[in-house]
Image (cartoon, rainbow, N blue to C red; front, side, top):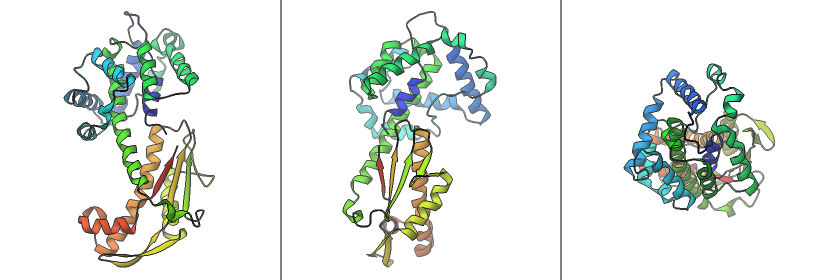
Length: 323
């Protein structure tokens, strides 16, 4: 899955034009629905969005709250000047915000009923298909292409509207988070000794596929997210081959040679992709907790660094990702 897919799919839902008398009626209806959904869930989403904007201003990503400032970010991405996504201080500040959605959505029928076809036809949404077709024809969803397509139809005035402002802030923050997530996984995966798994590969590999419809297939069989924990745990503890190693504090122990091999089809949603990965990470966390209690009478998070390192070596997290 491409790092920028979230960028693409968020902006695939919106489009712009140059008329100056546009009233943003459709956008405002969707945004009101979005606000109400979070209000019903006791989430102050407006506060979260404001925090994102303040963080971006603090790190000089946004110069100010003007629409021109938003356009300048997109121009930087178009020109390949997107080094800000690697700023660890920026990342930490974004992570400190408790809740950041991945898109603006509206499923409330009382709002959806207001989105009649005539209104949509007269709105900026009629340009969506043109943007999508252009990107599809070019068969490229790189950040520079997407930014270029956006700049073809968006202007600074659009980002003065709260709908587009919110879309922009959600997009920028999730690009930074996704970049860090994939960079971290890549670092872990690159250190894995592949040669250990050449022998008896079928027995020691647990294959997961996420298809374009956000359905999970395990060795070709349909599987629910909640079923993964038990299946993966059984594979690591019972099915896979073991190798004996000598570990400090706990002596000789057998560890699994098993690896989790996960791939996704083009079209897999960001949210579901992360949900599955988090479930896999939870399996390792659960197993580490079990061994931590067994050997040290405490959960993994409560152990000191030396003991945590022992448990990590006893239960190494081995996940291969392929796009």
